[in-house]
Amino acid sequence: MSQPAADSAPEAAARLRAALLKRLADLVCLPAERTDPHQKAVAVDLLIEALREAAEGERVRVAQRLSAISSPPAALVRVLLRDAVAVARPLLESRAHLGDAELVDCARRASDEHRALIAARPGVSEVVSDAILEAGDIAAGEVLLINRDARLGQGALAILTAAASARPELVAPLLARGELTPGQAFDLFWSADPAARAQVLRRFAAPRAQLREAVDDLYPVAKAGGWADRLTRRTLEFVGRRQRDRAHSGLFPTLEAAIQAARFGVTPSMTDEIARLAGVKPQTGRRIFDDPGGEALVVLVKAAGLPRDALVTLWSALQRPGSKQDLVELFDGLAIDRAQTVLRYWDVFPPPLDL
Image: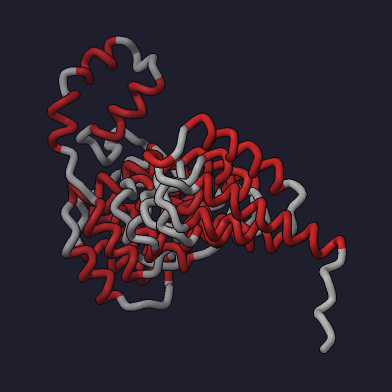
């Protein structure tokens, strides 16, 4: 009977290296009470050096071994997460604790597929979510949005909110996030469909009575100083009671007169005049009148304290498609002080022009 052929020298070397990697990985994975920490640290260093020349399959096996323990060594994790996605996947898909520093390093240095795997992990922190979006990876950001166990940082939310202008499918999952700020929601308004716009107004349009009470005594001080400080002026303008500009001297004596005149045509000069009389900048008025939906117009009319007839008049004059009844219902359900909050956000803190 013939004997099996002996391994060739390369095959024998490969078997020996695989055995060495397994022994080192086993030592690294021993519980703390069963190994000396200094020897374990040396084993980690040796394993990292050995992995530099190991084949991908061997690196995958080491990653799989490490993924079975709760807290793999950070230095080794960092090396494996920077590797090909096949190597990083066992760790990223495991329940093992991976430190924020290692995940941030991976998010900044690895591929889109790496970032998507990070985004799907339970317990993603704000600093990690920010790092994922800093790379401009909106697809991984979508994974983050639907991961209810992830926490989104303000940097990530700001990037996703800006991206929603070109990707309106982001609006609904963004509005479902508890971390979203009012300012971000009011920016999202412009990319949202009618139902989402109504949701923004119901959830984020808040009164400002407590804010006014907190700063009311600062108005005479700021006025006496000639409103010299820009930051103070902008903040007090946002909080203040006044909405209409009753001192404006223009084409029409009152806002009501301007709206009646709009029945015969809504020109750019007309929208500028209505905006000034309503107490907002012309560019804010143009954005509202140019918007194809009527929800922004609802906010303007309600904030100015006008009746629903004014809304119907303006919407009819614009000759836009859409249901007047839906706009009237939205108008009736929106309180004046809440509408003023939204309008002030748009006027005092305007969103980027590309939104």
